Image 1 (cartoon, rainbow, N blue to C red):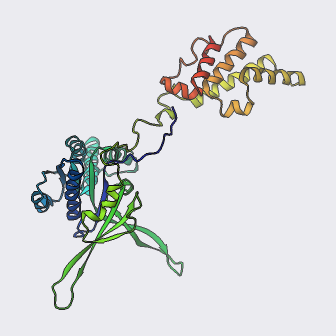
Image 2 (image 1 turned 90 degrees about the horizontal axis):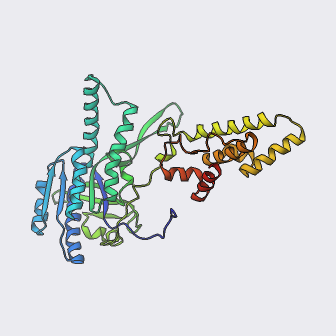
Image 3 (image 1 turned 120 degrees about the horizontal axis):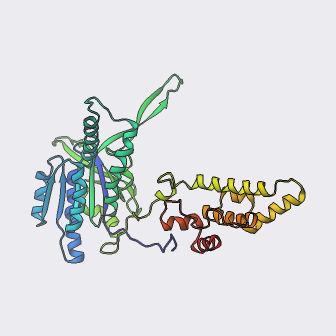
Length: 382
């Protein structure tokens, strides 16, 4: 089966990220979008979905009237536990709900703290700190959430706090480097900003015209829109309708495919001592060389020609191909044929070429190149 298939629009749900400083309007904007989306979907499909909010900042009390006035069922989970965040995505999907999380920053912080607490208990050291190897456990666990976010059959809006992005810049006189702010990002695991299909940065400013009281103007800047319809646009006091072009570009009501989670490259790497195909290849190549030297040790032209003829007969390849690219099972099959020719007996691989490989059958097929080639090797060794 080919890895590729005909391209189609298979993102059926809104996957949105909103971040900004305190007071920039993240929660209110997310609420307006969730409210507008629920009404829009009812008009389109005849059923109004509920809205679920995972609230880490007690903001749900203030935005609840937005949904109540519109007659939208509004459910809240007040928690900062990362374990609850994964459950929330699953429950929203099961309920056909629109989910918004405020703030995802707290879940990232809580997960790190939970890991550190567990580490301190495990080591019986209250002063233990996170070290580089610990991220090998923390980041894969966080990736489980991002996979859920992308693949869930649910509209999800993630709100997060803003964090500054820094870099070092040389001074003009070359005397030293200064750390400067070059931008902002969502305050969470550093790769999270890449996941949403629509990413918004919120900002605010205070304005006062002569003789009037001070007002706050909030602005949404579209940093990323994978549909490209809204890229770079800015909306003052944004509303749901501002983001409708992106929502209309989705495959609403159709098939949704985030990415194929069943595919993995685990099989490329050793699982145990037996599952080391690189080492096994080197062993067979050494056996081939030893067998040839044992039976045809001379360096005369006739000896070289005979060795070349045997290599051509049983491997149909150059020696460079044998050493660098020939699959393990093909090597073993060719060695068995060579062994029968020179020794008059089957080799140790004859009975079962894969006996010492702790690999699933599909991996054996990969090593061998194709099902046809596998059959040929097994038949040659029987």
